[in-house]
Length: 513
Ligand code: XMP
Image (cartoon, rainbow, N blue to C red):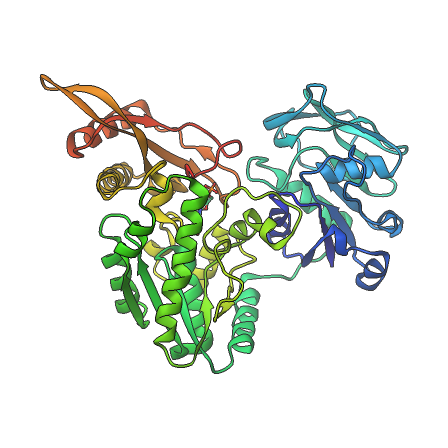
């Protein structure tokens, strides 16, 4: 067992995921639950201290029990975890004084070699992803410096004798491109052999679904995305006809989406699907609402109501299945009282009322998007469906900042269809992780022909990502962008200005709300 002690970083599960890729079994435990007794019982072969939002300079900030450092096993401290290690082992951490770093940075190696870094510095320096306000001012006794960045003179430090490693950056995120090498070196130093696979996950998930559900009926919230498709297929494999899918048409779907999704599930997957036409209910409740969290919570609440309504119609339905993924869980985790900060209330998790008549089945809760795709392939779902870009539960509502109107949604749908068509025509769809149009809440002046126009502006978004946790904007050519802008303005009445969003995540998020 490799134990990950969670101090509330937004990306702690990515560490677990990197370890799964290396076929290493690990468990994440919040720091509050890690006691000396628990350490003795679990006897981990290695420990990772995660990042976190707190500052070790604050009295009462989270710490692991001291016994962690006395286990005699390799320890890797990341970001906040690095700072905790330094403080606890006799070094010093300071806040502020202008050394905060967010985003890309480059680390250069020191002269001395370190097993953790073997094969990592292929060129003279490595790109890493930083996200820290505090910094280490003095390293703990026994530690030496093995890598520096312009903002972090102690970017990589270690006490090689004890196999204690401390890094300021996040090797688990996609934007530390070769970070997996560090985990590989770390688990090798800890003596792991590795035997965890996606096939094992599928079997285990099917077993657990059967155990949880028994002979009760399950209704599945189909959004038409990859997540709910894979969840439905997995649950169908586990409990067969005990499953009924409900596809809620909330009026916030893309052009022709409802017909395509319902057709696909009925024809290709042979599932029982109810098409719930609830456009008026959702759009009515959203009238006059412009606050993003209110939108999300309104939609989340209505989703539950609608499901309950349909569940009531199915004799013996006691479970609600959802394709909730780990990023949904972590970004909503403060709901559950965990240590990280709420960025957005994802409708899958956030809107759930305590006293819902249905219990949840969420077989994908521990997985990231690409792991879900791998599981989908394992389950035999059609490739074109697995390759679809993600689409958020609240749909177009969060791509329409400000007030939502049917007129704006119609414009947005058309613009989005043109944009996606452009991306497909240019063969770029599979290179992009997610692409969509957002309609902006401003109208601007233009001139078409000899006339003045006063229409909406829209923003094109396209990002590359592996897991949705971090993302970079896609570098379209100028030709592609101007061709697309021209097509949208010519083909979509109501838009006279097109912009391209070039924000990465962090500091932005992928969706606009
Ligand atoms: P953000 O905007 O948080 O999005 O960077 C990360 C990924 O999550 C999707 N997303 C959602 N998915 N329910 C979902 O199922 C939601 O409420 C939700 N909000 C955002 C988003 O499209 C992106 O892929």
